[in-house]
Amino acid sequence: MSARLLLAIVLALPLAARAAEPLGIDLEGYPYPFPVAFLPLTMAHHPERMAYMDVGPTGAPNGRAVLLLHGRNFPSSYWEPVIRPLAAAGFRVIAPDQIGFNKSSKPEVAWSFDDAAADTAALLDALHLPIVDLVGHSMGGMLAMRFARTYPDRVRRLALESPLGLENYRLYVPPVSPELMFRNEMNRTAEDYYHYLVTAYGLTLPREAVMPFVDIRERMKSSAGYPRWVEVYVGTFYAIWGQPVIDEMPRVATPTLFLVGTRDRTAPGRAFAPPEDRDRMGHIAELAEALAPKMPHARVVMFDTGHLIHLEATAAFNRELLQFLSE
Image (cartoon, rainbow, N blue to C red):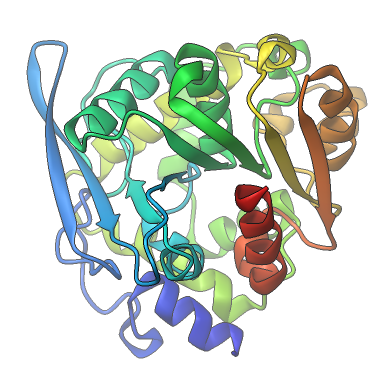
């Protein structure tokens, strides 16, 4: 399958129509590959809604459910190449948009991994799922770590794809003013954002496979709510920077699989770190290899990819994930 066709499927948006129409900051009108439902929640005494896809098994049901947690710069629709083989293998698959992201509400409150973990637990309660297999990508990997620490009895197996949080970013990145972060994001052009995704994530995808992610952001710029979206987006950086999980990971007894790309050098805040520290950050594969032996039941699988393994090496990623879940 070509990268052009793959990403058209993943994002459910024909490439010819990219950037054709404005988008609201809750991605109103942006089609996902499966039906989207909403869980009502309350945050700071205000009603909010968490969007999620709930996909039933298409193969013989095995009685298990997999929860997929997305990254900071991606809609949960990008999980489609993972959802379909999981469903074919008999799994029920849940793919939420976290509060503050994509089709979910954008409350102007401090974002935290603890709150996101509690919201995720509330979603599982509403779906009557006491235990799941958990897969987290990028920032979603960091949330998956926090969820596994907070609710260890609710996670059967933990798979971490290109996870953030394998180092404490505060050791390298000094405090950065929200005003500077907001201004930088408001001024970011489409070409700049494309360059950021490719270089920060070490992607091996062709340009046409990356541009759909860029186009979502460009189309939201036409929304009156775009400054609020940027403010919420900036707030999630401070959660990554200020709420480290690395010291807790040796206490995670859940069987864990790290899926990492050898070209992945993702390090949030690297641009603000002193020059002498920038090259020390973001060695995802090496960090995973160092952490796994400290955990009771963890191992590492490497791919010759960047940060988006399930799109850069889809077949190999799914093969390793399904094997891990079946062990």
